[in-house]
Amino acid sequence: MLHRLIRKVFIVFVFVIFTGNMFAQNIITESGSYKKRKLSKVETEFLFGYYQQDGDHSAVTGGIGTEELKVYAPAIIVIVPFIKDSLLKTLKVDFGIDAYTSASSDQIDPATISSASSKDGRGHISINLARNNLITGNTWAYSVSGSMESDYNSIGIGMAYTKLSKDENREFGINGNAYFDTWIVNIPIELRPPTIKSKDDYPRKDRNSFSLSLDYSQVINKRMQMKITSDIVYQTGLLSTPFHRVYFSDSYRVRTEELPDTRFKLPLGIRFNYFINSYVIARTYYRYYFDNWNISAHTFNIELPVKMNSFFSIYPFYRYYTQTKSSYFKPYMKHLSNAPYYTSDYDLSDFESQLIGLGFRYAPIDGVLRYKNPLMGKRKITSMEIRYGHYTQTTKLIADEISMYLNFRSN
Amino acid sequence: MNKASWIFVSLLTIMIISTSCVPVKSYQKVYLNDIEMSLSNRKVESMQTNYLNYREGATGANESKTGGGCGCN
Image 1 (cartoon, one colour):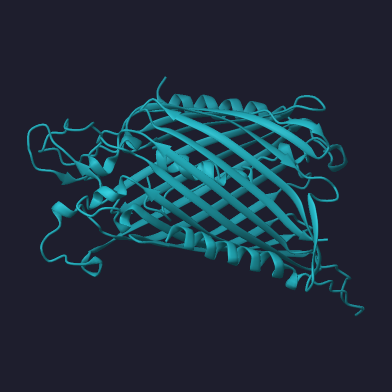
Image 2 (image 1 turned 60 degrees about the vertical axis):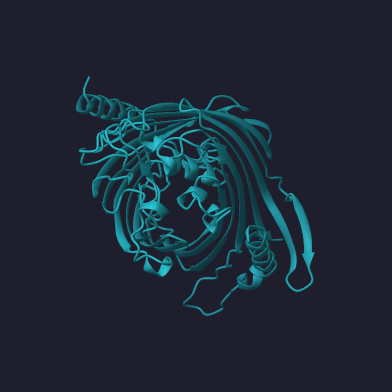
């Protein structure tokens, strides 16, 4: 099923790339009341990521057991600009599939060998329309999104406003999003009541998320600029994961994890970029996070792009992260059965993590690769980027990830 | 120092930095407009931010999911 899924995505990708030029037209009017405008060309972006992990604290089996997981994630983004007078409208359509195999998901129903739950996929799409006034520099943007997987569906809407200062040294943005999600509650096989005979009998429960993001960018001098970002997030509904098991120190009964039905999160982030000399740039990022589940976290990230020449750069990066545990977390068989809330999901435990990696970006003036489409004419790959990261946690989780980005335009 | 003190000190530091800024004209932005100086995540980073959101308790303030849209934290 997985290779068929990836084959379908590849066919869609080839179709989009080779027909993506159909909207790229040069529109010039000669009417006296209109200004001549050459329509910008369509961009198509292709992203592919491969991720694998393993560890010993699977939440599906109560905080013990394999966390082996592999994810293949292709995505295509099509960007279509329209321009009339001083108004630039940009339509962006982003769609992709996350196809994954998970050894722990197989344990939701361990009686079946290589059950369907061990392989799954998530399809997602988002559509964004932005209106940028080229004179004032202000932008309004509207978005809708959706995703679907075997046990979770989501619909999202969003709106954003960005204001640029007259001297273009400062920018302020505000962005609101709402997600209306539905869990198809798939609990472990041994805990299902006899009335549940198939997936159609699984109950449905809602999860809603609301966020307000504020960001402020500031030019400091000719080589330095910074950005502050904050998100205020409120979630309500089924916030636990229905198939996560919890075992107790004072009872032989196993239950599914139980978490509060509300959560408030507040992350604050700051980016600081500095062009050190003609070849080296420092990109730094710090975030402080806290929520009402008693998790607080610090994130520090540094990246040092080295410009080998005007079109090739290589960048090592390092990220350090530390978090405190949620009030509701305890390891395997440490919870008391009379606790109102309990989880053994190590994503909510206290740990430190490190991520180290390397990436490179190649964007020559004439493009990486030119080719000719018999129907659409000359096309080119304008830039490519490849990135690898190795991630470790003090919980013994280890992961590797490699991603690729390609940008296509008509030539 | 408690949380409120940290937030206050951070905001005060940011305000001091902001007021000492030098105005830069558009034709002087040759370094600032370099793609490596962008104040946004790289597009190739999207998978990384996704799996970090799944594997860690903290999310947000980095142009990624803050909650919702997936069965994750």
